[in-house]
Image (tube, rainbow, N blue to C red; front, side, top):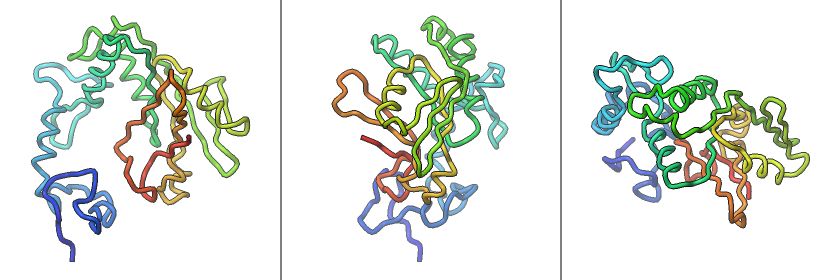
Amino acid sequence: KWEWLSDSPSLLPPCDDAVSYYSQFGRIPGFTSAAGRRFRGVLDEHLALLRWPEGIQGDRQLAVKGEDGCLYHWILPSFFQLIKDLVQEGREFAILFRTFGTDLPRVLKAVCRALNEGAHPLFPDLPDLKLSVNMTPGKIRCSKRGIVLSRAEDRVSTCDGERGLYQYLSSVQGLGGFQDHFDWWATNTFSIRGGKPLWVDPFDQNVQHIFIDDNIRQNDEDTIVHPKV
């Protein structure tokens, strides 16, 4: 018999032998209106934070209509605030979007409109930051033979050693993105073995790679990023 053990979301299980609802039943439409009704307040709170400003016309790239007919931010406003903060702190940085989906071109267009055209109603001064956006989506493809990263004329492969991919990603400037290899992740049963590769050099004193993904879990058999040291 299924039994709830916690009334609040958490990154870690509330006890050692607990399993997540998602791991047993998968993604359920209308979850907070049925089995997960106790979490409805969490959903409503976050939806309110994502509401597009009232009285401002929606932007085709930056706003999206929800199931309730209301307009919402398509990209978290906190993302643009982060960019502003990094620039104001004088940090040297680059941002790469990594997705298994097909939404990368739209993401890059939306970010470009905000950063280069000042189209975001909450951050109209973003063009003052003078940040470039590479509009060409790249690809990362994995196989038993190795990993190939490509974008426009650039092509780097693990056939020449893992170090080359680390150096390539460490040298990126501005903002851009790569589509990762979903079929490879699925072939590896959605485990760490088929996850999005993340090259890390703990001895590099100049560059730090940070990966943010809502599917990173502390379970190698069910996570989306594959760190490579």
